[in-house]
Image (cartoon, rainbow, N blue to C red; front, side, top):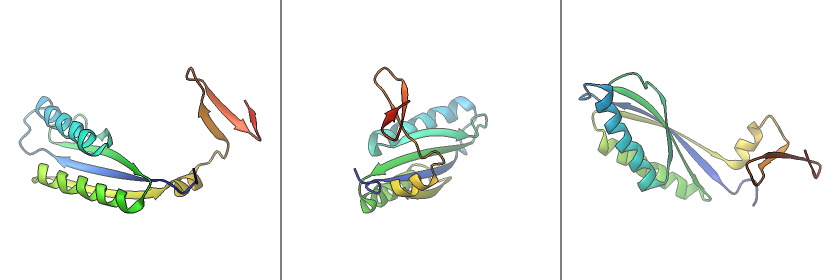
Length: 129
């Protein structure tokens, strides 16, 4: 696989739940949104902020694709779906990077992999450590 043959989109999603009267109500809505983002779009989703507030939440969703144009289309569909699902309060910040972009950010140039059994191995100049 060529180093620049993949792309990742990171969507930082700020949600407002004006009708939520409790954390339980917010979590119910949030779980539905997270499940649908994963099921409809294949996004990996994590709540990253405002877990203790009734009416706010920050999610980070990631999407991947081998084609930049396709990734942009799917990210736009996610944003459209979120705006339709949460018309009273959603904002989305989209960040897209190639694998090559991300590789440039890697402070550790050593290759790393997970071996069978879950053990992490590092390869340096063809030798496993």
